[in-house]
Length: 450
Ligand code: UGA
Picture 1 (cartoon, rainbow, N blue to C red):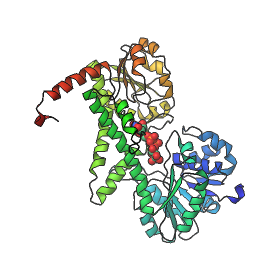
Picture 2: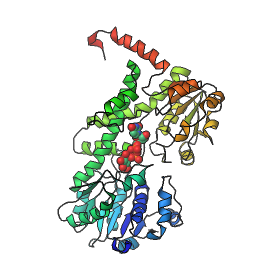
Picture 3: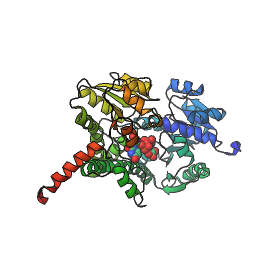
């Protein structure tokens, strides 16, 4: 069967490229994956996977015979017609997307050939248009990726939707891409190139907006004595709203949301349009991480000389990705206030150590808690739910926990001897604050109320 399937080329074997290569190989395709970093290619050829992504290593091992890793563009061009571009588009200092790696790929393409560039990298709307202007002979298809780190293989294999954008003249190339995705199920949406590019940016920006929205609701809940978990549940039951991405916490991170929200804001700004809503989404996300510091100060007073433990460093569980992780901002803020920071992450400690040179890395959660004046749960790794919290309380100088992800059961923690603070969740401390703030609002004349 595999002989009948068309070979697939992948350019750039980062998270998206590697998952794309492994999954197309699993579907029976021959895959040629090219990266410019020789060490990466050598390691992958030996079967070594440097990123933590559940299921990926198994998939690569199982399909090793179908995948070739190479640094040579010529090998890729000889072996495959459909070339999936999966290079990264990190933010520049200005907040725009850095397209230099995408441009480098385009420059390496022969000016006339049967190859089809299939853009998976997240690029600002208009990028495809400009590539096609430069290379009118080139077939170009936009096929944005919607996978999430931590569940990337599952997301690739079972997509909600596959968006395939092509402009007039490239319908045949788009049909070929559609053939590849058909076996996966999921709705296939055909659009023009610019619309496909916008769908990706708008989807990430909308999800980020949902998170910042619920985080602001959580902050108000703290003031008025409501519980954000119950509020989110009640909102989510309205199918127009939906229940996902309404988990309040200390904000979103990762390699995508911060970059894509900023890129969309800048894309609009470059056309002269001020995307006000996204400006607020970004600001709320920044401030949300810092609220943890206020919560700690509420209990501990000055943080000078206080030992604060961070549980979890990766931007979310089931990944070792530290890009734009909340832990980076939080640890810097805590150290800025004079605190001593100790941290533990089940898989990201090694990656994090390079970025957090002045943070002490513990080899277990319990070790991190030893003698700590407070602990902040930053990433909701499952093992933290299973910790013996009574034993943990006994090891700490002061059993105070700020649950930055509303992950733990406040009753269990209180029962274990902890002072518990969530985000927009009710705790004894919150109730005292909310009662007084409600009284304050009630005694304020209407015209002066915030
Ligand atoms: C995100 C999108 O969800 C994917 O669809 C997209 O393909 C990807 O970006 C990308 O552009 O490549 P990812 O960055 O892997 O995927 O992570 P998410 O699971 O979406 O989480 C992003 C952040 O939001 C995390 O820091 C997470 O903790 C936070 N989050 C998520 C919340 O704070 N609350 C929520 O309710 C959900």
